[in-house]
Length: 316
Image (cartoon, rainbow, N blue to C red; front, side):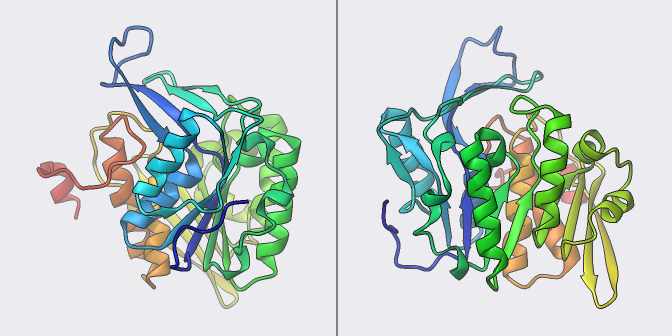
């Protein structure tokens, strides 16, 4: 097991697989693209990188192969301000790879990857109980039975601490079909403190048509955030005996490629949450971070473009 590479205690710890990502240089399908770029991307490390860019001390916990791609993954995540000291280098399995195919989703090559071989023992030495927020997603339990057991152990540990367990449902159809995923993802969501879910995936998984229906299905989390694409996002926050519902519209954006925007939204929201922001400001922070990613084929865009669009300025 590695040791932390920073002496700063992470306020946010994200746990999950990160892969080498290959994407067309411009938003065109893989079948016709002539120029490709190599990046690194994974839902949980995306959240950590975006939150770190917003000033939150973060750590990412995972496993990579003892190969050039694993070295690149660890280096690039670290270069973006995230502690990678708890990332294991596994000589027995490769680093996962995936391709973005703009307009057609993604192609995964991650079966048997180092991260899919993680077990509950993989997080035994990670100080999850000391973090203010531990962030995970519904991708991890889909990777393997061992990863599902890891998630169960993580939920048990964080539930017994003072920290907030943040869970992005993040259903990935190429990993498991909705019928198999729905009950497990619902159970995990009910055991966490803060849940992010897209209204579209809530419909596919559980048949919910409105944010209110999602909240009725998921009354347990203290905070529930439902994202509705270019419409906006709704937060339900339990206060006293009832809920306070807050809606903030999305920022008008010309979308280049949508993959990764949900992670950026979660990071923006969590950074504002950790800084003590109110509900409306948390949702707005999420939208602002997602807006950056939606304008790129990359999952991580560290800075606001120098020339903002009129639509963006008008939305503030």
